[in-house]
Amino acid sequence: MKDIPLLRHSVIAFLLAAFAPAGAAEKPGTLRILTSFYPVYIHALNVAGNMPGVEVANMAQPSAGCLHDYSITPGDLVRISNADVFVVNGGGMESFMDKAMKHAPGIRVLDLSEGIPMLRENNVVNPHVWLSVSNAIVQVRNLADGLSRIDPARAAAFRANAEQYADKLRALDARMRSGLSDLRTRDIVTFHEAFPYFARAYGLNIAAAIAREPGSEPSARELAGTVDIIRKAGVKAIFAEPQYSSRAAQVIARETGATVFALDPAVTGPPEPGAFIRIMEENLRELQKALK
Image 1 (cartoon, one colour):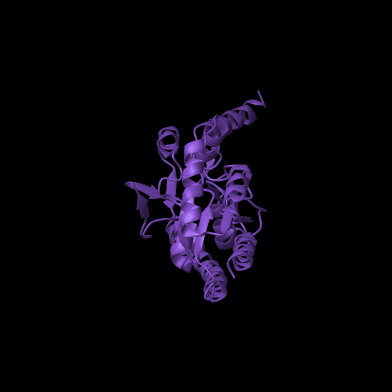
Image 2: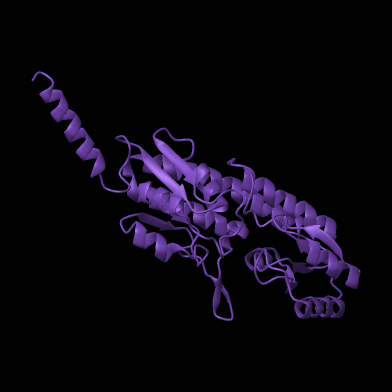
């Protein structure tokens, strides 16, 4: 009989744990942030990754690339349910959101593309907003504002971190604009349609995109059309992406005499706060090499 109070206590503890609401923190003061994919994850590392009591995790594997056709897994849905906030790029990048919201209807979602003018082609929104550094700054501030509403006790720290990172991004943006101000040509061919925001920000002209979607091989007709555009426009630089095969770009280069370079959409990389800046600086060097 002496064990009954202990047993009763164990049962109560079990029931409390079993019926805790989805997204509840594991311990008082813990804020669990889950991001959808790599560029959003890097934003979150800079705004909240160094703070006690805050956990920042990324859903898609670092090698996943863009999420256009990402197949969300049961494990992903569990991770979303267990998070306190799910941070997404928005603009249609996370095509699985309807399924995720059905599974975790109470989850708080922060859409980092809020307030950014979206580019469209054939009435389809292009979601690659982070590749304009000025847009990335807006996303970082959106993140800090959203986290501050969710966790007011840490609001000052979120906003201070965001502004510190925004200062670094502004300096990067200035280096990009200065470094690309005196190019010999501004016409480029990209691997897929990830770079319209980047091109608009830095005064480049995308003459053609080799593939409509990353990971898909263009048809013979599409290759021939791209070759024709390059010949007529006199484009000399084709930019493949390090995440995908450059085979189609190499075929086009052989047909046109153009040279293949690399342009990284910053969708994969190391889990380090400074990674986005380093990727963009490498893009700057590659563009200077190709276009000067």
